[in-house]
Amino acid sequence: MKKIIIITHREDLDGIGSAAILKRYYDQSGEYFFFFYYSLYSEFVKLISKAIVKDFDLLYITDIGFNELYLPFFRGTVDFHKKNYYESIRLKFKKIYWIDHHLINNENRRFMESILGGFIHNAKNGCASKLLYKYLKEKYGWIDSISEQISNFANAVDHNISLEISDMLQRVINANQTNLRNLYKIMLYLSEGDFENDWIINQNKERLKVENIEIKRVLKNLINFEINGLKILIGISEIFTTGSLIKYLFNNLDADIYLTINGDQVSIRSHSINVRNIATEFGGGGHKFRAGFVYKDIIKDNKISKKFIEEFKNIISIKTKK
Image 1 (cartoon, rainbow, N blue to C red):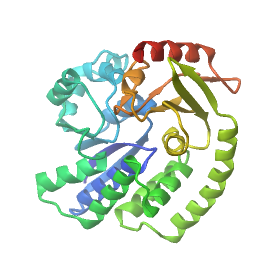
Image 2: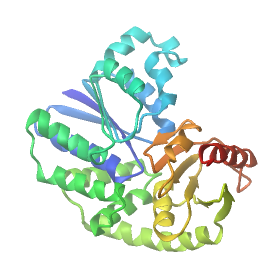
Image 3: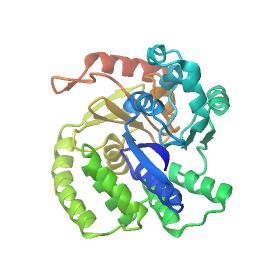
Image 4: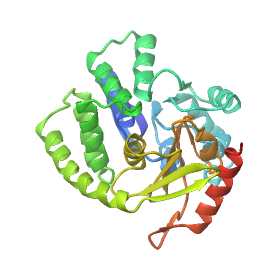
């Protein structure tokens, strides 16, 4: 059988949904065996380093926003390539198709387009699963109502539109961030069009109980301060993904810049300020008004690192200076 590797963002419905759409498409022929990698942005280089040395026919990357920290891997300038002959690895790049919806500059876009089999990045026309379904539809003439539903549900979550099924599925994904077996299970249910079974409904009910308790704790411990007249709001949680928590704060509290932290993962959002420019200063990326980055040891002794706070304040002062 032919082998397909899928590396997808594990934190949201867009990433899990993209994997489900790919499984639906390639399951039609019955000729493919799948390997799934569920990735955080901080894990991507480690996971693709594992994947690239395997024997495979196709490798898809979905809903992983391009980050300049990934460039050394693709340029062959990391230690990994000292152990693995870069030119032989580079030949495998033509089997890679990367489909995503985050911003990328033209120079990096041209480079990635030149080395991969396909590099489809469009920040204007919906989420990654929308782009993926459109790609499969246009390239292969594939029309599939379940995949279209998945992409619509994912798009609602990604664009801050509240739909009962979308919200429930996202909540269940949030609940299983440390359980890769269950993330795979969710992906399978999505690929079968089984969006509201007993397992999903029960997971959602239990998660709601946990979130109701956790959000009270988060709100009680919010950090806020001002820089250049801008109100900054910071929430910290080990229960919520940074994306889910920042969505709640963004929709319910007033601030100019929102920041959420879980472990080393950081999300940043604003109604009107280009936060991607701030995220890129920390090696991150994303969209103009919602982005993210990784900051090692940002939490120390249950407090935000003073070093990070000073760096953040300096960057905000420069980037938002009037």
